[in-house]
Image (cartoon, rainbow over all chains, first blue to last red; front, side, top):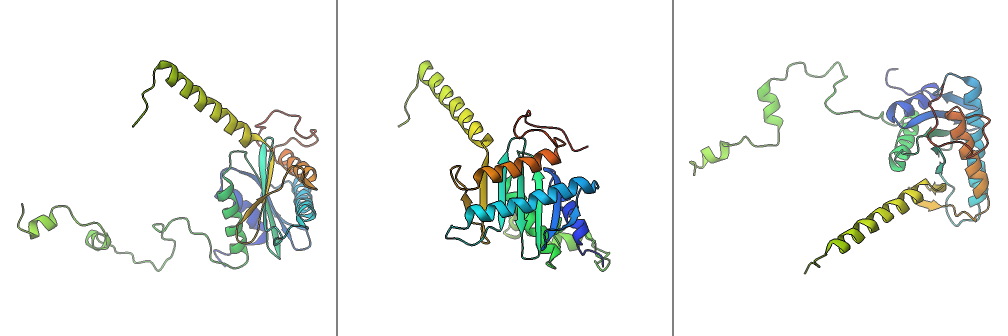
Length: 162
Length: 85
């Protein structure tokens, strides 16, 4: 089915969304590698192991906190940053450039996981029609009538000018 | 009313701005760990917290793997590494 995100495609999807993302991996609930943005399986498995260790370490560090378990993690280190997000079914981790904006990376992770779990796909722009059922004919008058901006001079003419 | 500044005052103001920028850049380069709950509320894992060092170590290993620095001792390389090969 077109537009459905698969576990195999999920990690690559994150890297498509953000130019700051270097590499991403997706783990299933058992901590097994389910998808990677890099074709090198050995490298992907190593990264997946670290991603699993990361959440284990975070859970250990925060188990005494009076708060819900961490859903997302951001680790800034020399040479880059790691962002990870998890749901009961999936864990998605991405290594990004140091300059990556945290809020955007975390939003992308959450949005992609939502999409993987059956949420609506992320839309790129409203103007790009991908549907075949979009109306073919859109005259300039039709488009102009939908514009919220008034035409310059029209009101002035209606009022008899000044 | 706005205070009038002479050349020394303006130079001091520029120096303050530069110093603040340097402090900000240093702060941004410091390793840090943030965890977010479901609502997006962020909490900083303090450096003295249990497990802080381990989380940083794992994070550094992940960055090194993705940047092709596998096997390099943590934080021993120059920042900005190359693209994965």
